[in-house]
Structures are given as C-alpha cells and as structure tokens.
Image (cartoon, rainbow, N blue to C red; front, side, top):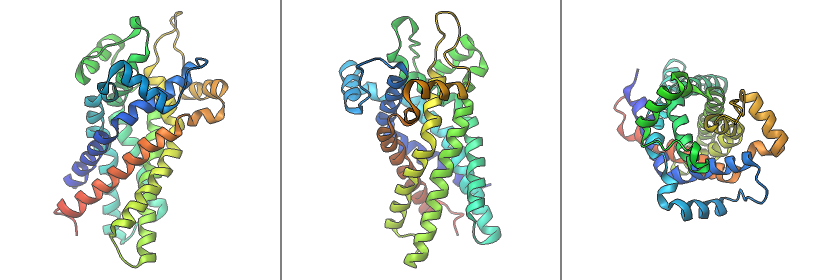
Length: 293
C-alpha cells in the first residue's frame, strides 16, 4: 500500500481546510439559523458574517480550526488516500478504470473515511455552533483534545459517532461527486484535447467536481450539523431521533428546498475546498510521489 497516496490525501485536505475554514463556520451558522426558524433573523451570509465579526472578531471564523485540521488528518487521509490507492491499483491491473468502478471505489473510500473522521467532525460542529447556544448550554471546550475527553466522560464514547449515518451518506455522496467527476471530466478532456495533464484541464475538472459534490452532499451535511450540535429539550428528550426525523422535520419547517439552505455559501465552501484539495493532491502526486510511473 502506497504511503504517499495517504500522506498526500491528508495534506491536501489540510491545505484546503486552512483556506476555507471561515466559510465552513459561516455555513454551519446559516444551517442553524434555518433550524431555529426565528422570524426576522436573516440567513444571509453577509449579515451573519458581520454578526460573527462584531461579536467574536476574526477569531470567530476560525473556531475549531484545530479540530478541523485533525479531521482532515484522519478523514481526508482515509477517503482521498484510499480512493487514489485503489484507483491506481486498478489502473495498473487493467490500464483504465471504468465509471462504475470509480463510483464503487469512491463510495467505499467515503464510507471508511467517514467512520474514521466522525469524532473530529462532531467536535468541529460543536466548536462552530457553541456561540449560538444559551449561556447555560455552552460547552466551552478549550481545544480538540479537551472536547474529546469531555464528550467521552460526560456523554459516553459512542457520542463521538453521533450523526454518523448522515456523515457516512455525506462522505459517500461527496466522494462520488468530487472524485468520480474530477477523474471522468479530466479523462474526457484529455481525449478531446489529445494532451494530458494540462493545467486548464485540471482546473475545469476540479470546478465541475465542486459543483457535483456540493449538490449531492448538502442535504446530508444539513442533517449532520443538526444531529451533532443538538442538546436535550427541557423535558429531557432529544430534538431528533435519526437522520430521517431530521429530514422530515426540516422539510416541514423550512420546505423541501430548505435541505439546500445556504447552498451559495456551501458551494463556495465545498466547491473551493474540493478544487484546492484536488489540485493540491494532483500536484503532490505529480511532483513528489517516487512511486509514480
């Protein structure tokens, strides 16, 4: 198994996250505004950005950056590294990889990566949503490892995998849209242009991949955010039972298109993250992988 496939997968995810973290924070806040359903409260990204900056300053946009980077070190290492490794392996065996094989590989890699990355993903959502909670419900985690320790101690080990079903579905849909689209578009453009590894081809392919993965994954990301940040109701019950309950209640409260609330911000966040991660991974593979043929 190639060490470099996994190393470059994790590094590309961390580079992309370092650039996109403020937009991710904004995306989470928009989803929570939709859930709260407070009359007159704007879900405009510009309005919320001013609100975050006014209340918390620049640091407010980078809440949970340590858990975000930790998440990429686990999640992206697994999902991007595993896809690249299996893709390369299949290419060596057959000379090419069919669309169906790409889809299967991407879904499998997304499934494995989401299981590994869910704990740090849950912590990240809590960091980003903490300031939206009433004072008596704020968790005030000091850092990512403090969060892990307190969650296990106060809520039990399995809480780290709360929201894992939408996380798995999100990761699988994101991998499918991002990785399969990138490779398919790139391969088809290479044939049309009769030239491989053109920079413009890679940029176009990563741009299309960003559109595809954001459209497919946003409903699951929305559900995941709500499940992972939820706190008990006054009667001790939880707001949501499972992903199906989240989706049904969200549609009732926000309408069907509410599942795609904040799509503009989400696309800017996810689309750009996909582009940066894909282009970074491709650059590292092309220039620093000694096993590349």
